[in-house]
Image (cartoon, rainbow, N blue to C red; front, side, top):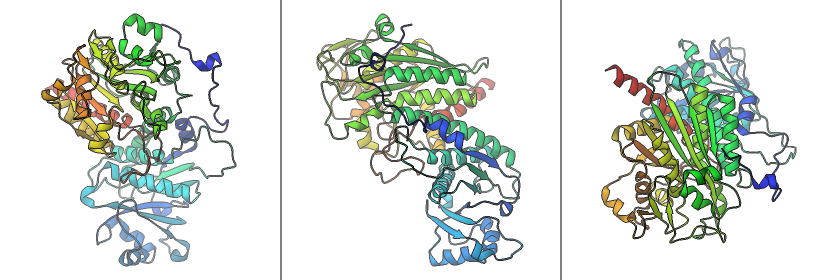
Length: 552
């Protein structure tokens, strides 16, 4: 295996140096914030802020009656006047000191935050994440070091305590995440949240289940933050080499294996797609092959494959300058694969996972690949290049064909592949393309559970006609019509009959600008880490379905 190197090591351009006070986001958030599940009445918990939530309905929720009585009917009065609303994400703060007096039933909380849940019929796990995220953000805004939150959705929502606890931890921790690796130490005195107490209702014997769920939520949030850090990181830091090195560090820490193929390895293997896109770059390419073994006899293997274009100029078919800085996020698929490997190992998922990512930047230069070139891929198929800005599918062709050789039971690839998918679905859902209905349906369900929603797009054979090439076997673009579909068909040519799904995350991988719909645990202009939680929710359900099928 070739030793990878970077231009940084040669001294051509020194890498940016992070502030010594700030580290990687996942380690920083989880080192600061800890969860406690309180096994006592929430009225007895001394806290500067108690977060509770309310449906958008005319009558107060049953759980609010006692709270309202303790506050002298303030909630009912404020709701009647419209000051309190159950509409999603609304927040009303009540300072309790003036209302409680010497009441023996008085709350010990200094403040109560009442957050809207929305309609009862719309309740899902994302509702729980959102309340936790809004509560954590409000506590930080109030410069508090700790707060308590009342879970919901167990008695009337049908969710088990583990699911609720995990959702709370995901929402709160992801909302508290910030990317400040390169912020100078400018005296910012922002108060970090050091403790979050989860306080079930006194009639719920749920503490142990919630505690286990919170622990899993912490691990899953950490893995998502790993993906966010890598995807948000600038291209002069997060090169293909850096991705490989980071994957190896995480493999050593969490207990999976990592093999990184360098440029000479890829040349020997015949990975013509990755090498072609890399031709214009001063940075060497890499293909990472990561493996997690659950050590369960007969366990199925899921291959997760990610596009890792560390910066995309478009190459010879260069992009417009406006917005090009966002193209540091074009590696989001590879970053999600790395984060998912961390999650699989940390959570001890009951499946085997093969993670493969193809990484390089796409630069214009005298040696760059050109429109009109014909490239031999790892599989032996010839790709005719019509547009060098359709490079993601070119590198994925090699990664997918390699993954097929490893004989997984299913393949899911993640890629910020096409602007056409953003046109079709906006920033609310990722596009799902699949050759297998059962796999697609399982991913759709996981999207609903994780909040990382998917919408299935067609893969009718008529669309494949658009990518037939006059010189090679297939061309790397079928033109503007159905652009996301023809891109998916290009990838389908390299997976054969293996159950496969392609997730086009071009509209969901980062929060560009000000979207109309934006989960409160995603910061604008930063990576979302999309795919890590989706694949984790999918993997758990997929393992169960495989076990059920084997038993029958």
